[in-house]
Length: 418
Image: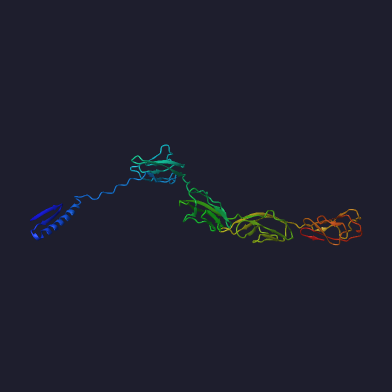
C-alpha cells in the first residue's frame, strides 16, 4: 500500500509493507520521520511568526542640554547655533518665555529646530529664557545668556605721509601707528617695493630705526597684519636729507694791521665729513687761506678793506653740499710807534712821608690798551704802580726817605716799548 502526505511544499512518501515480524519496527521509524518532518514544516516562515520584538523604552525627561552662556556673537557678523534637547516626545516646539528679554536685534529662533541665526546689530548681554515643549504637553524652561560684542574697528595704518625727514649720518627713530583690528600686530614692507634707505631697519613693532648713510626721497609700502591675519598696506614717503651746511664765522673778521702778523679762523657747522675752503677774490697782500683748516694767516703788506666770499664744501654723498658767505676783512695802517713820553732820566715829583702821593707815567702810539710794569728797581714802601693807567700812587711811610731809581715798561697788543 502507498500513501502520499503533503506538509506545505514538502512531499513525503510512506510505504506500508507486510512483514509481520518487522511491522512494529517500520511503523516506529516512519512515525519518527513524520514527527521530524512535521516539526520542520512548523518552522516554515509562511506558516509560523518569529519571537515578538522587545518593548520600546519610555522616553527620558524633557531637558534643554545647551549650557549658559551661549557662544558670543559679534555685531554685524552672521551668527548660527542650534539649541540641544533631550528626552520628551517629538515633535518639539521651541519658543521664548513671555516677558523674557528678546534675542538681540537681528537674531531669530526657529521654533521647530531650536536654531538661532541671523546677523546681530546690538551689543548688550541678554538673559533670555527659552521654552521647549513636546507633543505630550510636557515643557521645560531655561535661561541662557547671550553676548553680542561690538564690531572691531577696521584694521588701518594711521601714520600720515610723508614720514618725518631724517638727516644723513644721524640717528633716526620713528614708530608707525596702527588702529583697529586685533592685537598683537606685525609690521613689514610689501614684497617687491622700495626698501628703506641704507642704514635703516623696520622692526616688527613698527619702529623705524638706524643711521641712514645716503640721501634719498622714496615712497615705501608698509604692511600691517593683526592677530586674525588680516593685512592692510599703506604707502608713505620718507626723505633723508643732508645735514644743512653753514658758515658760522661772523662779519667782519678781526681787523689786521699792515706789517704785523695776522691770524683768523673760519668756522662752519653741519654737513658731512671734512670741509674744504676757498676764497674769492684771492688775497693779494700777504695773507693766505688754508683750504683744509679754514685758517687765515700771514703778514699783510698793504691797507685794504674788502669783503671776500668764502666757500666751504663738505663730503655729503652723493652730491657734496657747498655754501658761501661774504666776510669783511680790514687791514689798517700801522699805528705810530709806542713811546714812553715821560723822558728817561726825568725826576718824578717828590713826595713826603705821611702825605698821599700820585703821579702818572705817559706813553703814546701803539695799538689798543697800554699795560705798565716795573722791570727793575722798586717803589718806596706803600707806593704802587697801576698797570692799566701807569699811575704811581700811595702814602709814603716813615723810613721811605731817599731817592729811588726805576725802569718801567709799557706794552700794547702788538708792540713792546721800554
